[in-house]
Image (tube, rainbow, N blue to C red; front, side):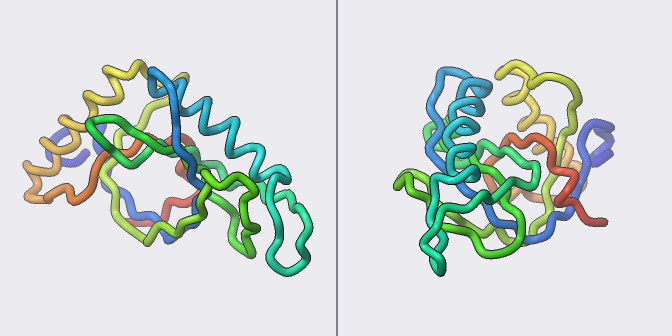
Length: 154
């Protein structure tokens, strides 16, 4: 583990593209559910291919993320998208963005999504572990599920 904390790992991820939407809800789980439902509509056909003008099934590559911290709250949900031509979402609240290749300090968990207090408590553990290694965290926290498909060797 990083900084003597066996739960914290440092990982490198390749550049990837996401479809992102505002996430509403009183808890992290509710925000994820809201975002998931909205983004599923986009990847299953509520979109328009720029060349053919037709609706296409995009699929997802297995990553659901909550990110964009405002006033201490995670405010958007995103799916990672497969490589290739991505159609334009019909829903104006959904945007498509490329996330650059980056290193992330992560805490892994298995099973159901932990309680908000547990997830948010991980940020302090991660920042403390990084500080012990002389590494400065440069971005806000994100909460992600199923990231293994994008992982590369550090």
